[in-house]
Length: 431
Image (cartoon, rainbow, N blue to C red; front, side, top):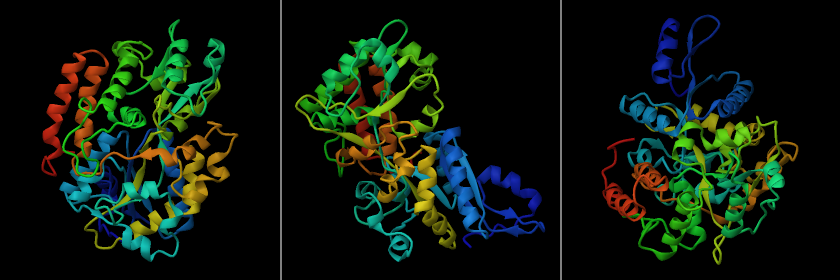
């Protein structure tokens, strides 16, 4: 077993709450080993992960898993940073590829490559190569094993489209079609579109217009939101959704009610998000909704951004066998099917992604295949030690521009200047 916390049972609850320790007690009151899993998600997502853990424990009667959930990715980063600093990290943690770089650079992750190579249960060819590549921090060996392969899509309220006489989204639509739909859906207390002003939401539009986010995807030194003409056209088009066309809820209204909440209430025509939104959207019973691909830039190419989370093992544990046993189960057919049925993930296992467990047309969205169709067009942001910090700061400054709090030209210039030093910042200077 990977970790034996020799504590009295009376102290286990308090310790688990403090550090997420995975120990437990058997019926006789004796300490027993456990696996600690830390991850992020809302209530609907966590329900899916609890089902996965229940299935693992049922199949492995000698194992016990302590789930340590947090609500947001930022909270996860803070918790991981403090747990590593305190020498009590979780056995397994689930993290997005855009955020694992700082831990990989600090060698805080036990690479999974050798475990996968030796596995008789899993093999690399089981999984999407695009998802796998995002977790090759050094470009070769797998640091973590990706459990999902999502993309940014357009969720839409089909009833609002029909009521407004707006054609439903379809494959091959372009920015002009998208904007026309957003305009046609805006009015009478409704908005056509909800989109977070962030690098992750902006990136696919930049790539679709044949632009680039950074000067060098492998060794970036700066963002290129202004200098590259194709990129700048995409940035301006994205900003104009709010600043010129007003099809997105303005600052004050977004603060009072999020776009997701507005979509759930039926007063938002389209909502841009990844597969993570599906468990919450499945609570809708007042209208019909579905998913469509992102629009393509006129004269551009189809593009979307990879959304992928992976199971990582903390480095420095005496024994990783139990942590790997959990990951093997979670990434096997049964584990991937369990999460697929929850609606939370697009399975990274190719056989499960193309199975009824994921593509069941009786479960919304009916067009789940849109996530699979996007796979050839997925791109990833840089996997560097400081990318999470770059993106977090960029999102804050981009929000200022998007909502008109600062001048567009001055705001974008300030964004690039302030972020340039972060690309070369030393590792470990913040979560």
